[in-house]
Image (cartoon, one colour):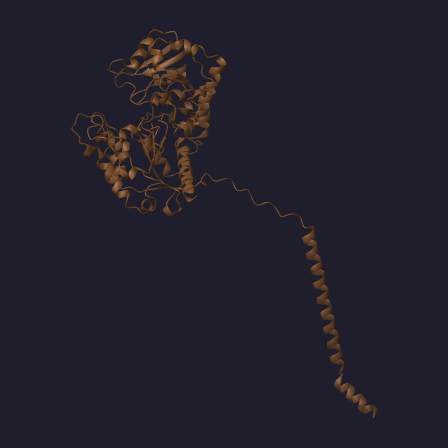
Length: 457
């Protein structure tokens, strides 16, 4: 019987089964132990691990504010105007003037200055800004080729070049002739999808001439009626002299002849004008006008009687049309430069004068107030002198007014003038630092972006 029981036990509880069971229990225990250790390690890592490293530094982008889309206009509105440059002026070819992306020909006679800066000087026309801006914005960091991603839309129509041929001629051009290209361009523009979405409120154009050349109210008046055409109502306009009462206009600097290629060149120029020895109290550069009571003629007479204090450059005729070394040499050698109004209230000479580190003297408030705020700020008293033109006619001595400023006051004003130079020069875009082109682009984007956000609210 015992043998029978043993047989049953061996049959139902074989040694192999017991061994397998023990092995299974061992594996389970080992798994539970590993799981417990893993939980302890995880908890410890959470409680005692060091803080995560900071995210990598991302330098601010110059285009964080938005991007600019440049319309590909039919060539009749820009490229063809340059190709037909001989037809733009009834007296003189504009081909040299508009060459080199609007900079004009390189200067062959540069006043005494650091020799390394000579290649950055050109004979630049005062009305070439629209060509310069188009050239630069095409390779600007904030340009986009996708209209859907743009904040602002630039219209590269050379309106000043197109209109200029009709302004100074004896030919009997009609109002229709003067308006034709402007009307044709707007007809094309109104068919474009970005225009249809905004009706032009996020569009801008740079006009190379004063705003008054585009504000003809009657057919028999001067210029074109471009600004008054209905499609122009919401477009932001940049012009070398703005209408102070038009909130859609921004004034931009007249181009000078200095177009630096690097920030090093800018710094060299600033050092040069800072340390310049100035032997004249003031300078007057200009030309007489054949009109009664011409204020410039009065200034010429005054300066010729103040030869110990005033330096004169007479630009009568075409002698100063593209600049002359005498102009910059006179500004470089003077503490102050006289800036009467010209054909309009503003003058290119103001920027030539300031580029040389000379302090401008204005005789009309509108020559500087409510103009160029993006570039010069809104405190002209910090870098200029104002003498009312009526007081000069009544006998006020310009020399005595200017001699009334102490050397410290003159030094402070000159420092301010020199600090503003980078803001109003038009560099070539290859690394000259932030210049007038960048200020225009950033300012337009911000203004349109603020306008869009205001409309949403």
